[in-house]
Image (cartoon, rainbow, N blue to C red; front, side, top):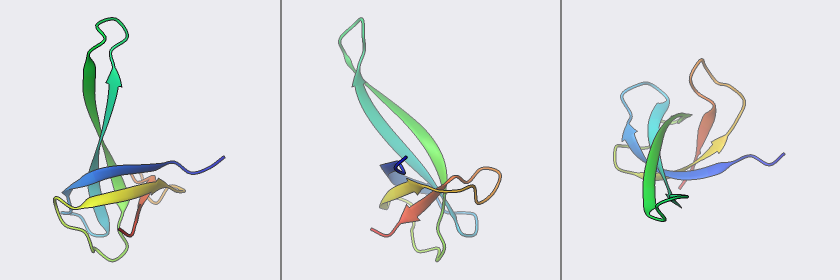
Length: 76
């Protein structure tokens, strides 16, 4: 099974080697036919602490790095 890749914005880099990435998705509501925006936060592994708040990044699924980290940042 291929690894999922998502695009998002870094919202926090307070922890060592970890960034919080907010990923937004858009879809059409099934009944109202209105475009809806939903966002979800993912914690991703950032080996070199290279990313700051506001950076656009790509994250990829990986084996669990810790209790909450299941994603890693792809350099962008």
